Image (cartoon, rainbow, N blue to C red; front, side):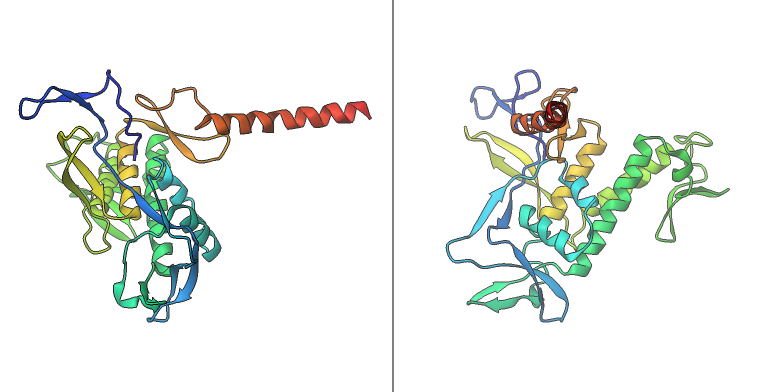
Amino acid sequence: MRDQRVTRKSARQSVWAGRPAVEVPDDPFVFLWTVSQSGYEWLDGVDGKRRLFPRHTPGLGIRRYAPEPGLFREFAALDPTRDAIRDFAGKYGDLFDRWDIEHTLVRRGRLVGGTSLDRWKIKIRDMRELVEIWDQIQEKRVPELRKIIVRSEEEICYVRDGTNITLARKGEWRRFAPRDVLLPAMCALQLEINKRLSDTETPTLVVPRLTLTPDTHPRIVFQPCNLLAAMWMQFAQATTGAYRLQQCAGCDKYFPVGPGAKRGHSITCSAKCRKRKERADEEPKKRRARKSLR
């Protein structure tokens, strides 16, 4: 989710029960997730499928964190192999909380379970395909978009997995220019993301909740139910254009650039990464200097 920082310029004011107005964050989305500090391992579930289970090390428990806004892009680019998925989970946790409870095992008196390798692969591919469509829209790669946006005399369709999904029927085309594919593609992407945000079967549901600010003022927030849902919410936020994502030159992670976030010319996400990049830039100069002294 985006930074929960509050600025006087962008903050909203609220008054409740005669209390003075207070500043609250613009971003109504809140999410914390858990990661096993012992890491994860692939084990056979009771269904015989490989599943990602948290390791158990005495003295180590779980840590909680808020995912950075560009985590969905890192997930979309993830190599769908056991090692890469395990390393990703070691940093960010499993996709679901108590997913596939019927396939959990009892270890040391505890019920443990995890997402199957097959499901990880499906969810990675799903995110990757839709992020690619978003990139095509952003970069106006019209020839590629024409492969998924199909017009006939009766309707405009979006093609996904060999299935035509109707976007507009004849008589509903007024908002689409005759040869435009960018807006229909954006409508298709909107349709797909909304399906993920409201999915109760996977689940990736995002639900509204009433909560209190630290000074006891009520506000509505939207809370994803698991890590996968949070990454779909990140993706949805990115498509609104409220901020753009910049890949850090120091750690390769994505960070938000725009109002309430980093400045537009920033190339690193933190002072630590800025120093890391400076050291990396200085190293070739030092090598050339050492060679010239020989």
